[in-house]
Length: 632
Ligand code: COA
Ligand code: AMP
Image 1 (cartoon, helix red, strand yellow):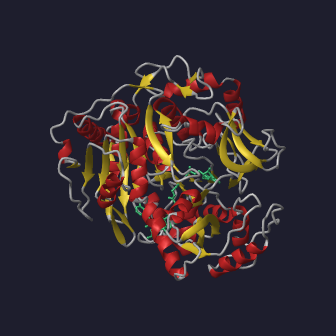
Image 2 (cartoon, rainbow, N blue to C red):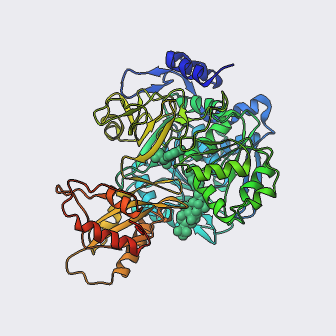
Image 3 (tube, helix red, strand yellow):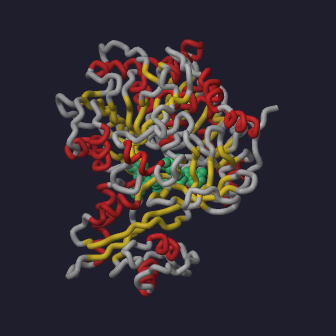
């Protein structure tokens, strides 16, 4: 019997042969003669001499193999009370038509297309349609504001934008079209065409000569064939938060992405063709890209597109209903979703109402999985609960439990071990490996495996500087943590200004840029404080300009509004306090980490370089006013 150790050692002994073997599961127009192209190291490319099409592999080949009548997508939308099943044959037709509509408007290989859509099946079809015609899609999460969309439009310079007229959130319809119009107004780059999916909850006004109705645009167009692209041509760009307001455009290449994701579905998720796989996330995040759209479809599974929330749509039993109704084998979500369910239904009354015997495992990622939540999920569901750790940049798990090979013992608080492809090392500041149990920067020895980012869109220098410079020869994950004697990883904290709110990755630096633009704000700092439900919440401190005597509550309210307008509701920025001064080192660096400790009532050492320790008392008082630092 194969063991994790065998597979991992097999990869380590001969990565080239390992990935060439995995590549056999993909249909190539021109097969690869080698896996890794390292002539431009430390920029690496995978399957660069091969040609293929990702949409063919995710859709058409299953139709050709006789899976045409199998559901490819199950759309379940408790928030709009809608359900729909789309077979592989129907999905193929959708991608032919949407791809054809894009081609008819001049979109071709290498052109960028932005997708700004809620959780509807057309969003997945839109992604695949772009892949079909060799265009590069960039999905923008619907909870971002117009400004964030504008920043992405200016960076990606899309020829076309695919959008829906609205999204639906609990208690409100969110019209997307006004946000799209506003974003295009704000952006310097203008797309030629926008295709708008009109939803009945809010129909959008179309701008003549630019906007087209989704279905009308598909009428009479030639169905698009799959365009053969290089394995190292980008399939998509996904923007993610960095330390500044300028998001990082993570690039994903077609070949390595298809090979790696297909491979993960068996090895990590123990899922086979025909199984129903459900990632309860959003197409706007990497989990949605990899595990709502690409991996399950590449494997020939059925993927669930769920439009709703874990609670309140209509109740804390929604997840269980979806699992039992659609025969879901694997559920993947963020721990926050389970914390929300547990809070509403601590004794699992809703769980008891459904037959969940089809469910084989629960996977959690996107943020730290706290042991309480894991144990509760284990008790309620009676299936393995697997924490796994990854990031937008990697596109698939760096560490996990290889359930398709063998189930390793779960250690609470650890996402288990490094996956084949990743040589994970814990390094100290000097770049030397730390002993087991010692905290350091979590790094991956180069090259990163197929499917991981080869670079950042239009920003190779930033790519090198952000990830490859601090530890030469390694990729810096931005997470700090440790590894135990058995090779189990523990992810402790980010080493940068990124916070994680309900599994959503956000930049405190970006929020500071917004607050700093308020006319009365002289200086500010945003930190992430611990939250029982969302893991972390952003909290802002603002110092006002000398002479400003406006009421503090008024300014705080304006700050909250500004962040919502500029970054979006997803930032969940609702906590802000006005203070006289910020604690700093003598060289002027704001002591954000110390403020986080005070807010969370955690122990901390007085920083030796602090300029004026008295300020920390003022910060503590301000935090108490917001309900934090209660026992600090
Ligand atoms: N379009 C428009 N607005 C959106 C949106 C979208 N696609 N997604 C979220 N928002 C808004 C919400 O309506 C909310 O607005 P509000 O401040 O007016 O209430 C705000 O953004 C924050 O949303 P959310 O993070 O979803 O928090 P919530 O309080 O509405 O719900 C949970 C809390 C725990 C139920 C929710 O966060 C959740 O389901 N989390 C699961 C995590 C997840 O899927 N992560 C993905 C990565 S794996
Ligand atoms: P994102 O790019 O949005 O997927 O966010 C990636 C970041 O989320 C990682 O760098 C971690 O900080 C955090 N993260 C993701 N999964 C886990 C996990 N299983 N445990 C701890 N942190 C996680």
